[in-house]
Amino acid sequence: MFLKLAIFGLAFSSAGLLVWQCFPLLAARLTQYQGKRVKESAKRLDNMFIRVPSKKLFLVHTLTPLILGGIGFLVSGEMLAALISAAFGLLLPTIVIKRLDANRRRKFESQLVDGLMILASSLRGGLSLLQSIEAMIEEMPAPLSQEFALVLREHKLGVSLNECLQKLNRRMKSDELRLIISAVSVARETGGDLPHIFNQLVQTIREGNKLMGKVKTLTVQGRIQGVVMCLLPLGFVAMVYSANPGFFDIMLQNDLGRFLLGYAVFSQIMGILLIRKFSKVEV
Image 1 (spheres, helix red, strand yellow):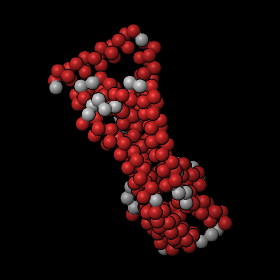
Image 2 (cartoon, rainbow, N blue to C red):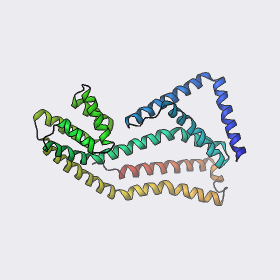
Image 3 (cartoon, rainbow, N blue to C red):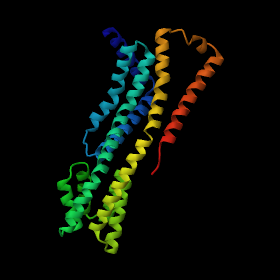
């Protein structure tokens, strides 16, 4: 195992030195591309109130493909598997950050109902809208408190409240939040009853969440079918290949066989995409 790791490290180091010495333009482009990815990751993390130094992000983006490539080479002993693992390692940091962002957005949306109830109660108690937002920030956990605290900080710096709320909507991109911001803007211009509006919004959001839950329950069978269609062929190929490695040689060595395999893969992908499309219901 140590010998394989040494061979893999030597091969990657040699390739890196060759690129750096013989292809300086390519090396500069790679460095520029890596720097762009680091900036995008830093911006996404900063929007989630996660502070990570750029140097650490650069190390993560650089070392992840090398580590995964080394693991792939150790497990399989083949350079192709190492390259595939390294390619996955290039995408892994971005995938993780997107997953963190999606989870944070879902948590934010789940806190909106409680936040609206606090706003309505504070307004009924005689507080202004800004004071009610401050009370909500003190009562609610992150990420709702973080986002509205940023709204208040921007407003104290001279930005109008409507513009601060629109920035919040662009950051979070939530249909429920957009509905709340529109209602607040209209109520402030026309002098509407904000506590009553917030109570109506709470009922609307709750009914919408119940409807979405029913839709997910009714479409769960289609989603499970898509997963089964994706995993079943792979499991079948792995089982047959482990039992008889030469079983697919006749197809791989024949033009018609290769065409049929390609058509099977294409049909499989199209089937999965169609099932995902039919199982997705817009409400």
